[in-house]
Length: 262
View 1 (cartoon, helix red, strand yellow):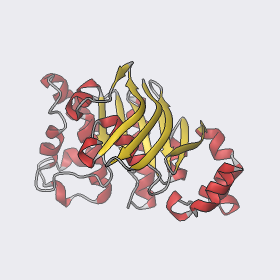
View 2 (cartoon, rainbow, N blue to C red):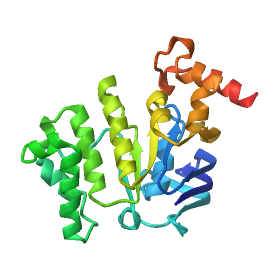
View 3 (cartoon, rainbow, N blue to C red):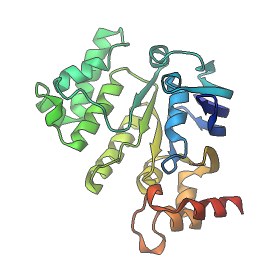
């Protein structure tokens, strides 16, 4: 489905952020990309979604393929029409619009009106709180409810692949669990997912496969169950024997870099 091959990205002609990144998302799977701030996760999403140019970035080497079609050079609406939708970090809902109006904006590229109406009904079934409050301004929703709305809005485009950029950011642990359940449900309904996260506990719990991105390079990849059992992953990101959850933001980068380089 999605194939990222040896991708390098440079900003403003001088700052190289991605250095030969390879990543695959197979049909029907959830793939997690883990890494701390500045690792290059969001840059990779921009390379996939056609938003690099807006930020002064350029793919200088490599290829991004979706179902065999190159995405490099395509604008964002064409990429959405091809079957890729993104939920950006921070949710970015339209606070002054109603919940239903927010959802309708997600169907802008979906010309199947009957299908869009069916999708909206399915979203209300998945998120009953949105259906109950559909006429209210979205700005009154809690953080978790706003994340539900952002995911629902992306699903209105009927994507084959959903990109999620740190959906757990700023949410309470109980809500993070709910977001994990939502990702499983979206995937069970037939949508593949690329999950960008710092919360390793949640990401490895919901994904089939995971990669770790450090300083623009993929330093470790494998089935999520194997990574969860890996002692280094447990010590660095899952709290080791203490069982306490940690995120990539809480782990010293130089410790990881030393280990991956050894």
